[in-house]
Length: 324
Image (cartoon, rainbow, N blue to C red; front, side, top):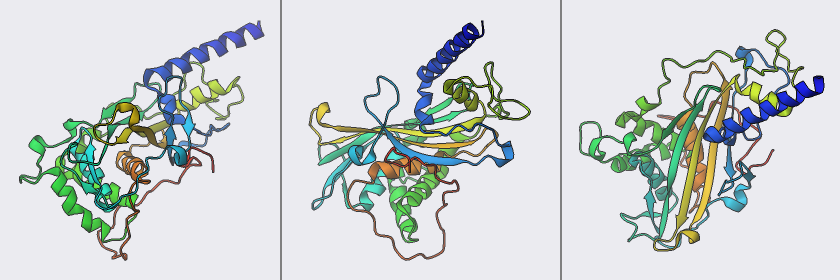
């Protein structure tokens, strides 16, 4: 009887985990998470971040791949022109300045470009088992008619004017991207889209098959790794930026374009209310262009208007997709 119960329980866990994975590819954002055998108190929870590559295409589930073998790579020769093609002008403007700082010329159209860099970006905020909040970066993020602040400057021009301010402070490329994105989000009003919902449930969930003891907080009753992971998901908040990008020469067939998938993920206590969207987006975008052009030269630190620094320790999954 015990064996039958354990078998049925394992089967039910498998169904739940599989269902959750197919619902929104949630497991893509749980790569290499070390699930503790004993939960710390909510106040003692240590947040973490990681950036990694996933295999494309991804028909059979998540698979980490090496950044060295999958990173977009292209060195400029003379004035190499690139056309940045993303649905959101805010995103495109930030990437344009990243590419410009790496020695590329920004093309006005695909026809005038030597290379095309494009793709799609999604933000996910997960309090399992509640449905995830998913926000796609589209033109809905942009101000009306591509202008902002009551003037007639385009978002791209705003990015161009903001870039020297942050580069002059000698900040890292990632911090520059975060600062630029944060400013563009504020001046366009896009930041309002990422405010935490009023009905967000932050308290720890104890699910039907939860194997963590509510008092001791130990997982001594877990019968499988699947049950342990399922239980742990109800105790944490997972935020992620998911970039699916492509790069190639305009006019080439789609099979000649290189495609990559970059994920930047944060893990916080379930009660955490701070949005990590901007810093995760900066990390993912910086990794996306890290193999393109020349690394921007940093100017001497001036000590004013410094970009926000990263506030979370880095987890042991690097952009190579391997443990450190």
